[in-house]
Image (cartoon, rainbow, N blue to C red; front, side, top):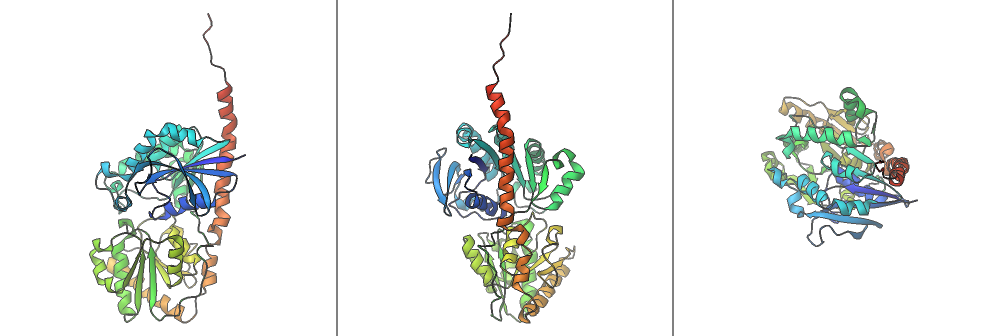
Length: 414
């Protein structure tokens, strides 16, 4: 029996959109088991496909069905929308609604389920008639630093969240704080929710010895959104450069323009910008660096964090609770509490990085021990569990759908 999973996500599998959610979706496309077929409802970045017409494509050696429902150029998707009509999420959701009948036909299977990454797609997902798995990737709250329209229209996010959680058959939160909030505030949602982080492809991100260079190399991969706090990241690196007598390189992997934050000017001379990279490209860059850096106000569970540790590289970060099991002082990096005094926070980060560089040079950190931190989060451990959830939900729903289909139409007797 083949199970059909329909994925809604604003991505072109042939394109360059990067981020933790995109990494998860790509893993779903490349790692689905033989008894699962995948339909991705997404976006055409290149403008070479007919909208609303399905195509079969090869994705990392796997065959998937791809239905583009809107054309949005790749460069447009990298910038945060300034008004509602420019929102990629809105345009994508409207495209789903326009082609809902086609999606319903393509989504059919012996058993079937739907997975969504954004609350905004909950209603069309439910209209497919299959169980819906809602992944919750972030725990943003009102007042958090956000580039997107959510920062100005947070009530829309909360409304979408309520609808999405109510309509979901299963809710998967990528860090325990998300589930804890549901237990406190939404007991009915908590009963159908579970914790499961995003997964890391440990084969693609293998452990490697530290590079022998005496230049300390710090890497960051992903978008430089406001909630990542790039100014604090850049100020930390400026101070670290001075502490290391100039023996520092910052390697940025991603498509954001760092110049929009004035603090970048001070570190630009020792920054190497790699632009968009495939997973293999990111892996090679990480293995050529010594450490990663995270300064975010909030996160779900960053794929970049897991990939850095999988490569045997420690992480220096502003503390978030979900990092605690992964980042251990003296073993896999360090954590610094966020402070209202930004200069003090930058100084604390830079001082800890200087000690980390010295410890690595002295051979006190072991890449294999760092990598062991992410073993429970590997694709091999976690992805089968997620696919099993989908299949079990589809099997449970199949008898109900068959019963409804077989039920005779009532006629009024006279």
